[in-house]
Length: 234
Image (cartoon, rainbow, N blue to C red; front, side, top):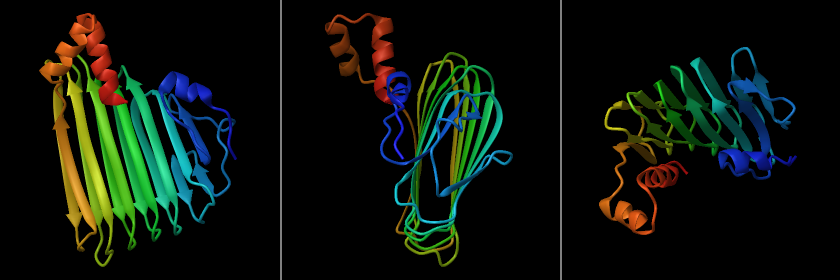
């Protein structure tokens, strides 16, 4: 069940682990690099469905350059499912990414990390629906927004009535050039007392003592920017 994907660590700083894997690169699904038994993937709908409990976690890896409108759907329909998603991309053209997560599996958890380097116009919309008791959806989004770029981040957590003990956390953080435009829109629709429901959004600005330390270590201004950016993203 484990395949050698050391290039994911070397090129994208993504750690792999024993799991059922689904690999996407530059917007395309890589069947020959993926290995899964308990997952159904509908390529036409970009829909990942988990309808029975796997022995191993499920690792969704989405890397490379993105552009255009992309819908990505994850449906969890079984108990005790553990899904990890690493989304690590660059967009140099306008990109609009919709991620829909439906969790109907009791004691099932989705952990997603979205990292993007935005050189143009980027919109990410994350919707997490809790459709059963004791479900978890956690999505952390971090964006490095470059000169004159536009970044719009939307997040919506939906906890339906009587779906108690739901655990939800959708967060955004952006490291932005002074000329970049940033819009963040976190929302929640909670119809039942949750175990936890958190939204957060922040703009990251390096501290002066961090900059001074790196400068005193002999790094130039461009090197300092690169180190701080990598620390923020990774």
